[in-house]
Image (cartoon, rainbow, N blue to C red; front, side, top):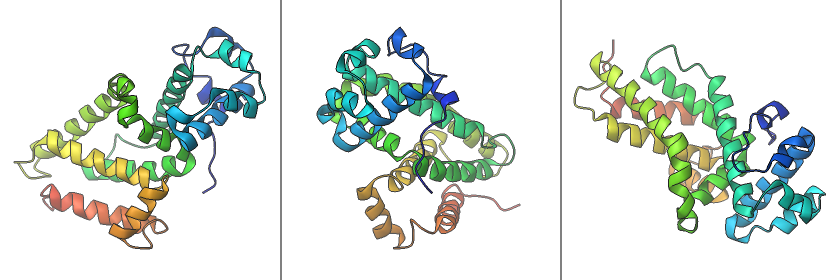
Length: 232
């Protein structure tokens, strides 16, 4: 699947939280070019080594214009994280998470992760960067926005499945939610990071990256058995 960048309508959803008013007034195609360039620079070099002068030059704008749009490298990075949130939101909106059981919904999430990770590898690499100690001052601020919503969603699904007898009665929804989300995170890393790609091959086989269905079915079998799935 050829990597793509977000459509203009997603970029236009960005609120003026971290960037300056001037950035929101320039043509969306120019905003896209700047953010695409910045995403590649941060993904390649990490936050500390990324150079805002290089980003400006590669995007074809002056450094003065860049600082007219963003107060600092950090606010540019935070804008990219906002964009990443909207990208995930758009993919989840296109995924049916209403119908079916816990297992139906989790399988759809796995498939959505495969799509997202291949379309937007730079954003997965930026997310990995966010988990480093070097950006610990931003971690609490940024993790709470998405992670809390996701945690509540998993726990709700697990409680319902437990109450209806679909899974074992002694399943702790907090621990189970943590484990399920870790599977999703590791899966998205595997499709966008060379290190995690090789790690996936070591653990799951040389064909793991190419055989998406094998990975989906293998994970779903594991999840069902781990949660004590009760066959109807």
